[in-house]
Length: 275
Image (tube, rainbow, N blue to C red; front, side, top):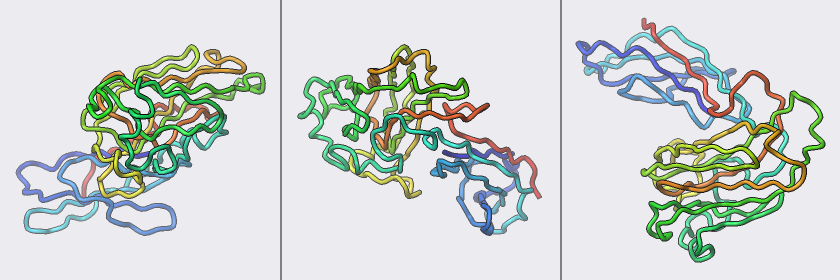
């Protein structure tokens, strides 16, 4: 859940020290969100319900002079699918891994518990390992690990065409290797690019702070209901390339959100005018 801002870069002839990104949410005053030398800002760790913010930019020159603020712009993050009705889930979707197996730092127990690289769980609320290792992880044998989750899906209870089914995969961090994750669920399949992270989530389990130590993110994918069947279904996640993913939570949700794509729950605002 995030909002991405971009604005026109200051002319190179002006000795810029940094930009000040200021924000204001409902019922609160303006506050400094970030100092940056780049004309972009990613406002993340927003609430799953969606948040609306006003943003403005100030420039600070090499002498420390602060400009007047730019014209404010308004942006709202999309509501996450995890606000829908949970069908099955593992974890709590709270930007923490501490409730998962072996968390927050006993990652070396994973290859001992699953020497063949095949993690198998079942049920509506399984206990999954907090890391899914990949071939870039020598400590885990340098192999492609997979997580297979068998669960029951009450397809017959879905009685309206407005109901959409989404798979939510939240993580608190990844490695600097990035990588590729293969997702298979019933007749649905997709390969996801794993973003490069901070390689700290193997030893730290809390990504709620904004200190830059961890780089959380998520995938929220619509799964056509025709790809699922009544009763037993199977989700398989295979880390084909790169390093581990440190999970926050994962699950299947039913929602009636219309007219929005949930693959990337992001709003983008452009700040192009300055005062």
